[in-house]
Picture 1 (cartoon, one colour):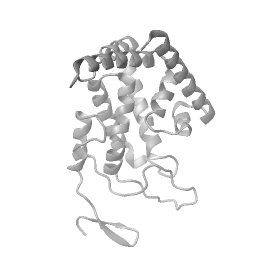
Picture 2 (cartoon, rainbow, N blue to C red):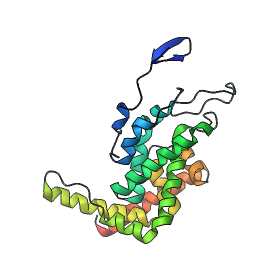
Picture 3 (cartoon, rainbow, N blue to C red):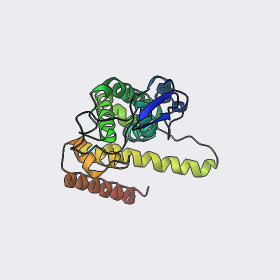
Length: 224
């Protein structure tokens, strides 16, 4: 039946893909937001948890359009925390979802969560960006990034300086610590963070807390 999809024993309306996807959850208004009209899935399922191992061999996956709506803001925030500029973050986020869309037919819901799968793609895309631009260019863009000034110019200027200093300190962390703190603050569990960066859950926690300690010491030392 047109406009409907079977879910269990009853048919539920399916909202046409495209229109609602134009607005991201948080940030990311450029190329990433424009992908919405082209990214549509065919099946539905849970977004944030892997299915039990005893489920049948054929398992349902979330519709890709639902995945896009659910994770656009989080992926954009993670990428921006790594590259520091909205322009680069929008381009990389758009590439992440294009790569994910092309690979979605190979995604196995029983083996990993959609969140872990998407953030792995995001991390790889970010690393590709770093290799292309080089660490020096990345640090320069991070330091030069400035949040938009709206009201209260004096207060915004102070906030901008603090933001620049903090992002510069994050960019100077060892790679695994930088990944741990960025992925964790993007909403992933320590178990998911560990799997993404190739270590145990306990090791991911240790990397995260070391990163926090280093940032706090830098802030106290520099009076940020």
